Length: 250
Image (cartoon, rainbow, N blue to C red; front, side, top):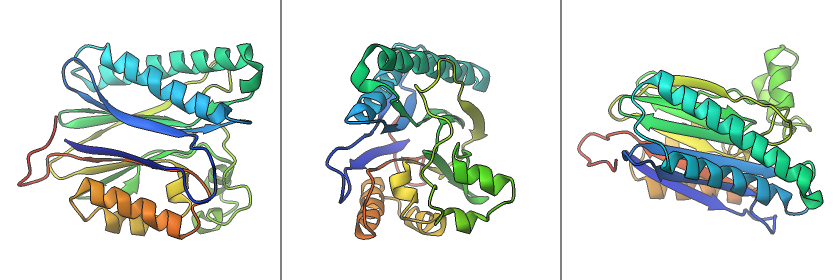
C-alpha cells in the first residue's frame, strides 16, 4: 500500500485547522485519518489535532485485526470514545467551547478497507467500477439533495454549503457512519477535507488519480485548489493499493 498525507493552509487563512496522517499498528496495518476542525479562535486546531492524536495512539496500541467485523467494532468504539474526550475538553476549557471536527478514518486490511466518518470530510474510491464517493456528507446541503429540494450541482453553489449537521465533539454521544468495501489490485483511495472538494470537482479528482505517483498527484490537487482561491485549508490522504508492477509499502 502506497500512502501520502498532505496538508496546506490555503491562500486566505492564517491557521491550519485541518489535521491528519497515516499510522501503523503493531502488525503493520494501516490507518489513515483526515480531520477538519471548527470553532472560535484556534479551537478548531485543538479539536482536529486532538482527534488525530487519539486515533493514532489507539491504533498504534491495537493488535492485528483480521475481519471486517473486528475493524468496524474498533473504529466505532474508538471514535465514540474520542468524541467523548473532545466534548469533555470543550466543556472544561472555556476557550474551546463549541469546538468540533469532522473526521474520516480508513483502515486498510489486506483485501478490504473499512471507512468511518462524521461530518463532510470525504472518502472516494477508484476501482474497476469507476470513481465514487463512499461517504455521505453530514451537511445541510446534502440533506437538501437527499430530499430532492436541490440538485447535486446546485449544492456546489449553495450559500450554506459549508454548514455541517454532525461533527465529532459537539455532542455527548455521537456514532460514526461505517462501511466496509473490497479492495483489489490497483484500487485507489482519496480522503480529503472540503477545502479540496469545494474547489475541485469529482471528474477532476478522478483525472488526477490516473497518475500513479502519490506525491505528484497530491501536490497537483492542492495546487489547483489554491489556484481557484484556496479560501479554506486543504488536506488529503492518497492510498494506492498494490499497484501492478510496483512494490507497495505495508
